[in-house]
Image (cartoon, rainbow, N blue to C red; front, side):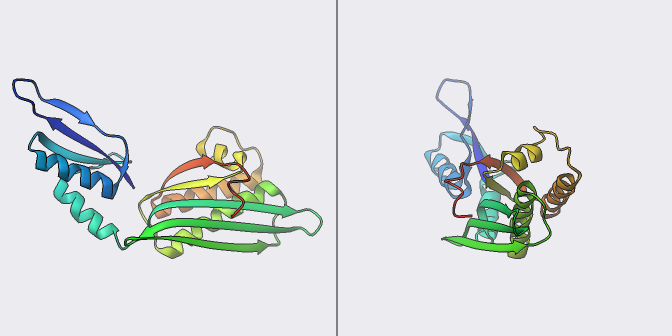
Length: 198
């Protein structure tokens, strides 16, 4: 999860000025907050996460200590492909995350026989990725979902309508899984070259 820092700056003979940072990862946000606190020039310092929850420095330290051992800072690449001749689909997922002080990459793929189109394979690949996150114990955090399917990403964002019943069912499943896991997704389209690994 990312956090922005808000603090009041106290200058001699001036009104208090409110400052807000860009979004930072938790570790950097806490480090900046502690430096501001040491300076003696910052009044109230608060951390605001991506969903609008406010944290004090003390609460932030405790939160980061708890989150440290869970998978966090998630970036998920997904890709699906469909072969019309064999009616087989391939689903791929790459998940980058931090746990403790280490960075990890998890790669998984699956073949599927019951799909009908390439777009359906793309939806299935995203759902497959979400089930992996569920197996990892990921709950109540932000994650970036990257894929080369504009159709999937734009329909999930609600920017493009979905008229196909089969794809609508996949959309419903994906949205339910995201809600059940308490994820705060950011959808990022990438080019096929960048998504090659998935």
